[in-house]
View 1: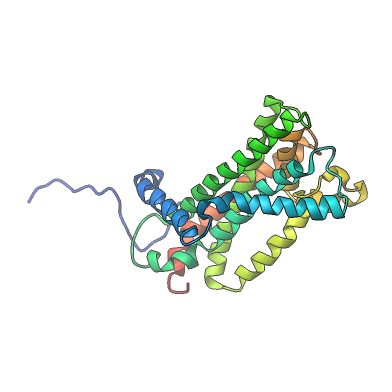
View 2 (view 1 turned 90 degrees about the vertical axis):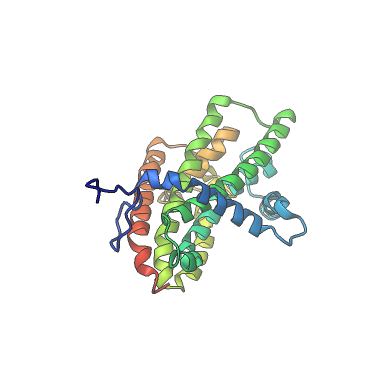
Length: 283
């Protein structure tokens, strides 16, 4: 027999790690990741009349309803910004946050039949959801930019490139929060299924304390505290400010939101890595 010790690329054992699979292993499974993205994308629009066009139809219909209800009927102020653009900015960022959070929160319950039979880095599954929703967000963002360019041409808004770069911050913060919270709830809902329904209710309520269809500048100062405790509130204001130049901007709440996002994301990833395989028999 040879005296050389055989080296293995991966070692699978019964113990789970807080850190999960190393980055090299995640990179090695990139084909699986993009395969899952493709499967989810095609599966979402099979046997539908409009197919992938639903990615654009949904936000357009939502904005039209917002314009009718909040602008025409309720007379909600939009800080001099065209109502369609004002609401489209808010709904674009909100859809990224809410859709990513909801789908990530069901990662374990949706994939338990795969996790229990095949080994691969478990984080690949929620990462595929993240990539999928970034892809959808790019389409939504392209629509937003197109509408923005139209209103520039109509001389309703101004284009300031240095200001538009700021929109990257709320995009990363909101998606980071959604991914981290979604990973935590994916662990919780694997054991307590009714939490999935509770999350849906909380998310609907949470929308009202995020400046999605209103600006914080329209909230009286004495009531603004109830909105400011929300770490995403100033992220939505910053996203709107990047396009329109209107919004309530504060440096420290924005930095605090970034720090809380990093903490939430870290907790979510660590908990998901540690608990996923332990919940196979429960889920």
